[in-house]
Image (cartoon, rainbow, N blue to C red; front, top):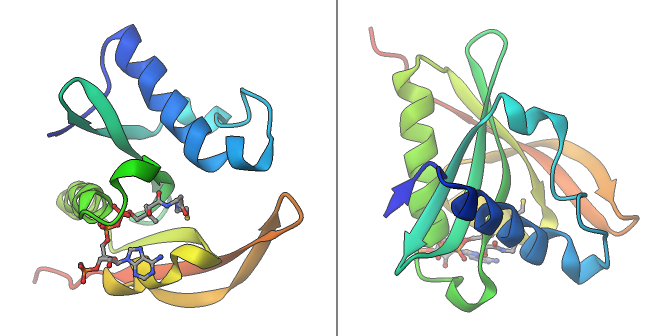
Length: 145
Ligand SMILES: CC(C)(COP(=O)(O)OP(=O)(O)OC[C@H]1O[C@@H](n2cnc3c(N)ncnc32)[C@H](O)[C@@H]1OP(=O)(O)O)[C@@H](O)C(=O)NCCC(=O)NCCS
């Protein structure tokens, strides 16, 4: 089930999964898994048996744009379609709000995942922690006439 985190326990699990998947393997301190945009963004958690095993954040940007950030699936559950479901859920919300496109900064290792979902590389972007190359990717939506 995909839902917005709600209770204090769910928020703890939500940020903890971000930390464990996206920060801990690079020995980054707790707190680095959050940023100021968390207050205005929309957050989504994939929950199974009271455990949060996938997370993603959706930001709305100017001119009918949107951006997906902090996508992470628990290592033990990767490759089972959870990331795809989270992405499609967030894209559906963006499209319903009239967004024309979604962008994201993908880690090099995740490029095939996003390409399968219809994203194309726009340009090479930043290097995180001095070693993780990112690529700006874009998916344009067909406009309803
Ligand atoms: C990248 C990530 C979010 C993908 O989520 P996931 O649940 O493992 O992916 P899914 O099982 O939904 O995969 C969807 C499709 O992409 C493919 N795919 C996923 N990761 C892939 C990879 N690294 N290489 C090639 N194909 C991949 C799957 O085979 C699947 O294809 P199918 O639909 O034809 O069967 C997840 O693996 C993850 O959290 N990785 C570590 C953190 C990370 O890199 N996050 C992204 C930061 S930009």
